[in-house]
Length: 178
Image 1 (tube, rainbow, N blue to C red):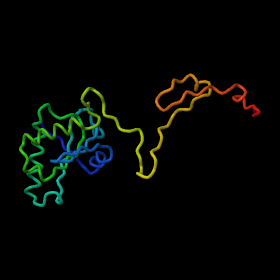
Image 2 (cartoon, helix red, strand yellow; image 1 turned 90 degrees about the vertical axis):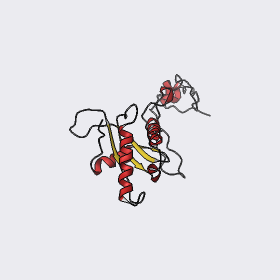
Image 3 (cartoon, rainbow, N blue to C red; image 1 turned 90 degrees about the horizontal axis):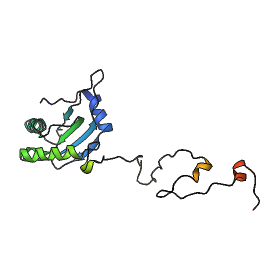
Image 4 (cartoon, rainbow, N blue to C red; image 1 turned 45 degrees about the vertical axis):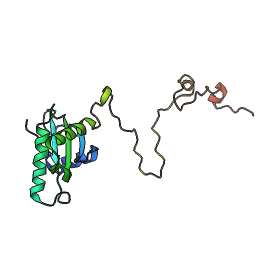
């Protein structure tokens, strides 16, 4: 099976913006769900960009060798690749690791990626909000507006107190003496 590659800066930026990171001693993998390119038919497949920087591996020979090893490990992965878009950034340890160990690490990383089925058939979920700063408290999740009569009918859940319905006079806006 041929391995499709990410093409162009725009595709890489989309994966960087929307992908989840899975780290391993051999590489860093950023995975986003599969979406077809503009104007393409829906053909679920793996589209992977392999990025090896000069900072990571100085010599071009080593960078090319790391790229070839990772590409072959992905191509011959038992069970195939899941439909996704990914950026794979190998570390220098990829050159020294046995090929079977590299394949096992790739298989583990792809199965850990959010959006894939975890053990037990449950989905890995992201939080509903994103905390912008460590000093700021997290933003509460938005809740829908509840009418006063509906408030007493709602069951009490964790962190939710059962509130009695306000008296009818208070609902109408009448002032009650203390």
